[in-house]
Image (cartoon, rainbow, N blue to C red; front, side, top):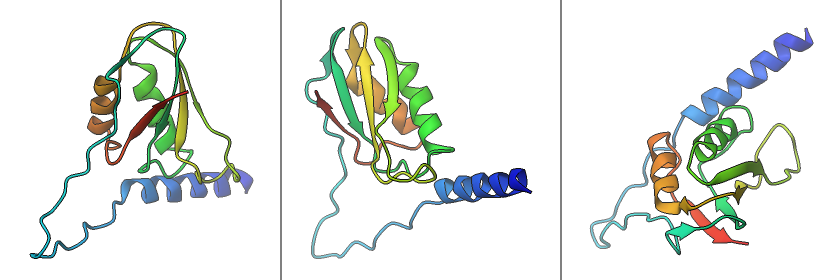
Length: 127
């Protein structure tokens, strides 16, 4: 029974992660503005720690593993960890901590996140 509940919860989370809210209507009075990620500087080096804010990362079962895998595949990444959450079954703080062990191209990482559906509003800050 517990296994079925966990499977059901995971499935619900996957469906929730896959669904995107429809775009907000654009009024003709104001021109549409594209969301651009904040990436300053474009490269970092070994020993640095970065915080990625990934607003489209909503669940710890499908979204976070995809973000973690994508960032971990980038050159220069030592580790990727989700910041502590209030509830293990939901993401209430969409930040991940990335530790570097070599040269790292932030724009390439943001582009890679975009290819898996997480580029909207990504912000990077150096710790």
